[in-house]
Structures are given as structure tokens and as C-alpha cells.
Amino acid sequence: MMVQNNIEIINSISEYNKMVNHETLHPLVSIVDFSKSDPICQFSRVFGFYCVFLKDVMCGDMYYGKNSYDYQEGTLVFVAPDQVYGINNEGTYIQPAGFALLFHPDLIKGTDFGKKIREYSFFSYEVHEALHLSEREREIILDSFNNIKFELEQTIDKHSKSLIINNIELFLNYCMRFYDRQFITRDHVNRGYIGKFNQLLDEYLKSDKPKSIGLPMVNYFAEQLNFSANYFGDLIKKELGISAQEFIHNKLIDVAKDRIFNHTKSISEISYDLGFKYPQHFARLFKSKTGVSPSEYKLLN
Image (cartoon, rainbow, N blue to C red; front, side, top):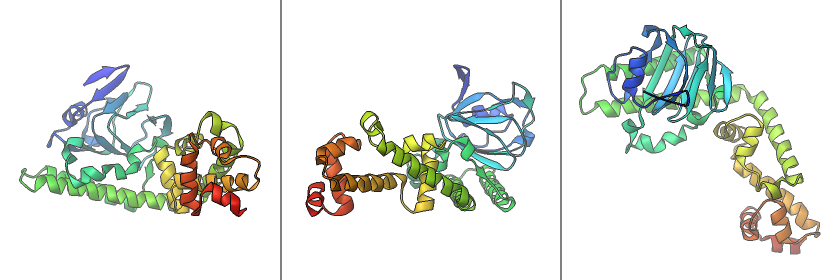
């Protein structure tokens, strides 16, 4: 374990297990039962592996990425390697409760699952975008943890790695389903964010920001709405059926049509006003959306 700039760096599963007084059954995977660990003091930490925490005790404000969150019981939080993670509890020791799944990138390197790990975008969500579980969902999560633990407790054979990885993948697929449910149950809230996104995009395009900042980007609006880019993108996709980037492109073309129709500026001027560095990039996007070039559209109107 190393410490840099008051941040603990834990690179291996065995280091983490030692910290919480948990036996290491496998060097690349662990299921931790926090009720059996010693009291620990929370710090800012960076892990060299994937972590999924399900804690059953109030333990202070958690921070992950740019935001903090009042960590409630029954909340599932996903932490990717090299992300700063921690809990503010004024340096006091607490007896944790709950569970954690830890798995090292080396476990899945070169596997089909390793190639698709980035599809589980919730590993890049901010902590306030955590997954809130129903009682039934919590039972399924604990069953998944128990299945992984069962494999870890068996004598290692030629099937061990694939069975462990398959169980981790199944667990994460359940989490994707539960996140879909969370998006649906918060539909009325999410639709408010869709309206705010649309308003912010309109204001952006009416300002001088396209010239000073450049094309409107998903990251910009996610930050304005206090979301991570991945969570925001998933929210838009679930609500509208298209990506946030596609929504932005559609808006750009709608605005461009109005400006071309007014005949007050050249195609190049319009493209620069919208944030494009090169008119040909604007022309390519315009034609992909409308089937005609900006010049041809101008002649039609």
C-alpha cells in the first residue's frame, strides 16, 4: 500500500483483504463480508481493480469523482480502477457492514468479458448516480455474491476461472437490468432533465459559445446538469431512444436549416457560427441527416 498526496493507493486484492482482515482465496477476486472485518478508518483511496460495494450501515458522506453522496443503506456503488474514492467520517473508526465484490483487470484480460467490460458504463457514474436496490433486487445481488464466493472456496481446476468470470458477468448484467428499472421509476424526474438539456442546448447555440468553446459536447451538458457523461448519456438513450450526441446533432441541423433558409450568411459562416472548425465537416453531417448538401438545401429554399 502506498500513500500519495494523502490518497492511499491499493493495487492488489490481497492488500485490500489484509486491510479489512479478510482471507485471500484468490489473488484476483474477492467477496468481502464487512461484518467480519475489523473496524476501519476511511480515507481517500485509489484501487487498481474493480470494486462493487453494498454496505448496510450509515458511514458518512461518500465521495467519488467530483461529487459526494449521503450513503444510504442498500445502495450499490461501482468503482473503476484508478478512480478516487472515499468516505468522509471525520477520521473515526467504524464497524462496516455489508459486502463488496473486488476483481482485478488481469482476471478478465484477453477474455470476451474483458472486451465488453466498458459496456457496463455504471463503473464511470458519479457516486450520486448509485444504484438503489429494492429488497428483491438486494436478494438477487447477495445470491450472486454467494455464487462467486462458492467458486472461490472450491479447489482451483480448469473450470474455476470461466465459472468465476461467468458469475461476475451475470451479476453485472443483473445490475444493468436494475439500472434500467431505476431509469424507468424516475421517469418523471428524468423528463425534467430532458427539458433542461434542450433549454441549455438552445441557449448554447444562441450564444457565442460555439465560436469560443466549439461544438456543443455531451460532457459539457452533463456537467451543467451535475451528471457524469456516461450516466447522462444512458439517461438520454433510455428516455429518447437516441444518444445524447445524436440529439445534439439533430438540433444543430435544425438550427442550420433555419439559418440557411434566411440567406443572410454563407454556408461557411454558418458552419463556423455553429462551432465547426471546418465547413466540410458541417457539410458531411448535414448531408448525412438530410440527404442533401447545405448548398443544395439552400437552392431548394
